[in-house]
Amino acid sequence: MTDRIIYEKEINMKNILTFTVPTMVRMVFISMYTIVDGIVVSNFVGSVGLSAINIVYPVLNICMALAFMLSAGSNAVIGKKLGEGKREEACSFMTLTVIINVTAIIALTALFLMWDEEIYMMLGSDEELLPYCVEYGTAIVMGGPVWVMQVLFQSYLVTADRPGMGLGLSVASGVLNIVLDLFLVGVLDMGLTGAALASVSGMVVGGIIPLTVFFNKKSLLHFSRPVWKGHEFLQAMGNGASEMVSNFASAVTTTLFNLQMMALVGEKGVAAISAILYLQFIFVAVFFGFVSGIAPVISYNYGAGNKANIRKSFIVSIRIVLLSSAAMFVLAEILDEAMVWIFASHDEALSELMIYGFRIIALSILFTGPNVFASGFFTALNNGRASALVSLLRTFIFEAGALIIMPYFFGIDGVWWALPAAEAGAVVIAVIMLVRYRNIYGYGKASILTKTD
Image 1 (tube, rainbow, N blue to C red):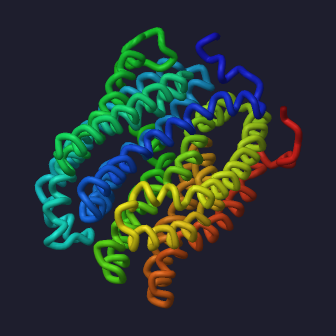
Image 2 (cartoon, rainbow, N blue to C red):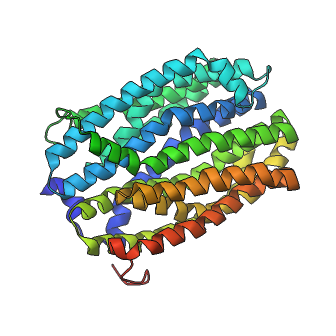
Image 3 (tube, one colour):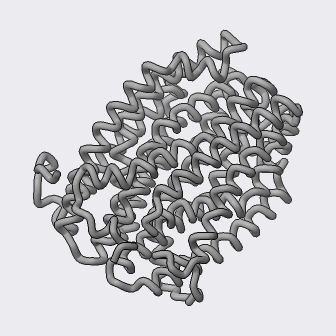
C-alpha cells in the first residue's frame, strides 16, 4: 500500500535519515518557542523578564506532561495496531486520545489560573518577579489546548507517514513566533504578554492546520468514532510514562536550578541558568526529534513481529545517536560565546557567568542522546516499565539528587556540574536496560557494527 510506504522500505541508514531528519529539524524549531521568547525578553525587557519566564516554565512542564505521555504512549499503540493491520482501531484510538487530552488540559489550565500567584511563589519567585510571572503565565497557560493539539498532531503526522508536513508546520510556527516576538515585544512594547501571545500564535499553526489531515478519511490516520477501551488507554499511559516523568522532572529540576541560583547569585543567576538551559535544549532537541521519527517504525515492526527490522533499526539508530552526540557537543562548545551573546550582549557580568556555566553543562550533551534513545526505544516497543525506569532514574533521582547535593559541597560549580554528572550516571542504567532486553526483542543478535546499508 502506498500510504504505508515508509513501513515497507528497507531499514538502512539512508531511509531512516530520510524519515527522521524532518522530525529532528522539527523538534529544534519547536524548542525555539521558549528560546525566542527568552532572547527577545532578555534584550527588550531585561534579566528580570527572563527570570520570570524560567519560573513559569515548570508550570508549562506540568501542563504538558499528560500530552507528551499520551503522544508517545498512544503512538506506540497506534503504530503496533497498524503493523497488525488494524487501521480502523488505530484511528479510533487516536481520536479517543485527542478528546481526553484536550479535555484534561482545559481543566488543568483552570486550576493553575485560580492559584497562579501562590504557585509562582512556591517555584522560586519573589515579590519583584511575581507580576512578571503572572503576566507571562496567564497568557501562555491559556494557550494550553492548542499546545496539546500541536504536541499530539506533530507526533501523529509522523506515524501517518507525513513527517514533511510536520516539518513544514514547525518551520512556519517558528518563523511566525519570531516575527511576532519582535513586533509585539520590540515594536509595540507589549512586554511578557507579547512574548506569550507570539508563542501561542505559533502553536496555533501546529495545532490547527493538521486537522485538515486527520479529518480526511483518505489519510492513513484520521478521526473516526472513538471507542473506549480502558485496558489499551492504560497501556498507552504506561507506555508514555517515561515522557510524563521527564516533564514532571523537568519542572522539579528547573525549580531546583532556580532556587539554587537565587540563593547563590540572585536574580541574575536565575537569568543565567534560564538562558543556558534554553541553549542546551536546542542541541538535546535533535535527540528527541530522532526518537520521535524512529519510534513509529519500531512500533510498526513490533506489531508485525518483524524482529529483523527491529534489530536493523536499533543498529542504525545507535550509530546515528552516538555520532550526533559527539557532533552536537563539539558544535555547542564552538558556538558558546556567540549564543550567549544573543542573550546577554548588554550585560558583561551576566555574559561571563553564562559562558562559564554553559561550557560545563554542554558536557551533558554527550550522554543525553543515548539516554533519550533508550527511553524512547522501550516506549516504541510498548515496554512502558523499562522506559519509565530509565527516565525516572535519569531525572528524578540523578538530576534532582545532584542539584540538591552538589551545590552544598561545591557552591555554584556544583550547579553547573549537576547535569553532566546526572546524565553520565544515567548512561550506565540505559546500557544495562538495553543489554537486559536485547534477546527478548531480538535487537541484540548482531553487533552494532554489522553492515545494514
